[in-house]
Image 1 (cartoon, rainbow, N blue to C red):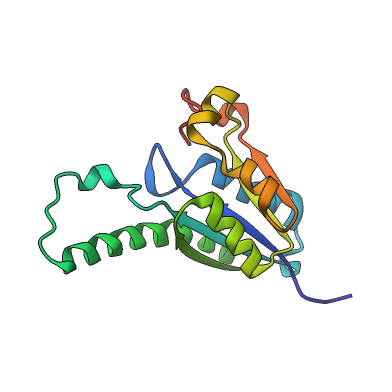
Image 2 (tube, rainbow, N blue to C red):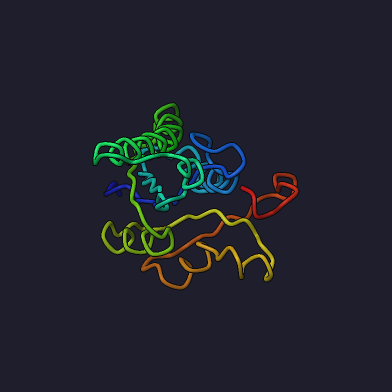
Length: 175
């Protein structure tokens, strides 16, 4: 029976090692896993929804020596951050178009944990897929994990995809 495509939301973020526009290891892993294990060859049966949440001041160190003398100075900074986020989303949208999977992508600003769950309530996807760095308990205390929060609070089924051991950087907090 043909009906609406299954809508899968994927939370994506930039690489902490390479920065924008490169996707994090975890985001790329979640995307690739979704294509290989769920979508497979049924590209018409799915619509992928990419959400990137930009953390306010995530690039604060770049702006430490900047001088803001007019409202336009702040606008240009916000525009720069928006452009970076769009380049990240462009990676995923381009890949979807290459293989023929319908998709949408958008940006939000705020705490990624809260914003992803808020967007799940608003958009009501069938499934949420998030990457996980697989941090140990000590690292989780300092970093917090988006995947664990979403597992508990998102109002839809959640699949958390761990990085493969060979993909994990020397410092597992990096992504």
